[in-house]
Length: 183
Image 1 (cartoon, rainbow, N blue to C red):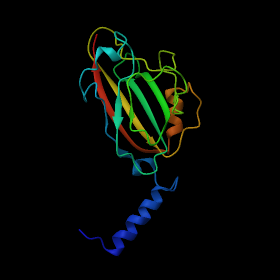
Image 2: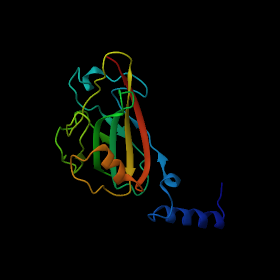
Image 3: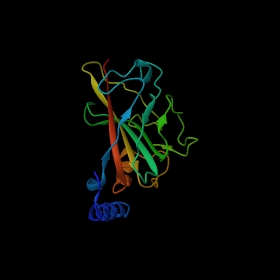
Image 4: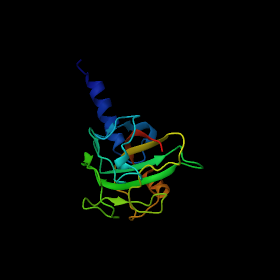
């Protein structure tokens, strides 16, 4: 299909507006990303190795086709089925925008070699805390990836709420991988 001059000009104007902060709202620009793991598939059981009953290390994660202008990435892992509120298991932010994967066992330090920071989870720690639901029904665990147009101006140990607040107006795309775990 050949584009006419009007379509090309319109596409150019829209693309330019998307790169101007504050011109279009977050909802107008947000795209969906695919995030996956070699350890488990969407909706499947998270292997014990990545839980409090195993090695309690982060699983390998990968993604591709980040939108143009991605400068930083954030990953938040939570359990929406936890009693009382969604329980935050992991907050990782300011991954470089060209990162396409995380190997398993992200180091348990507040600042990573890549320059990324880890935030405080609901266990009160600054690292990954694997699935650890109370005995009973299975819980879902969301690994949500955000592509951002700028790094966040936060220090290591920032809370999930602080990270979510700092991301407002800067999310270019997001995607979610859900795993299940039951004890």
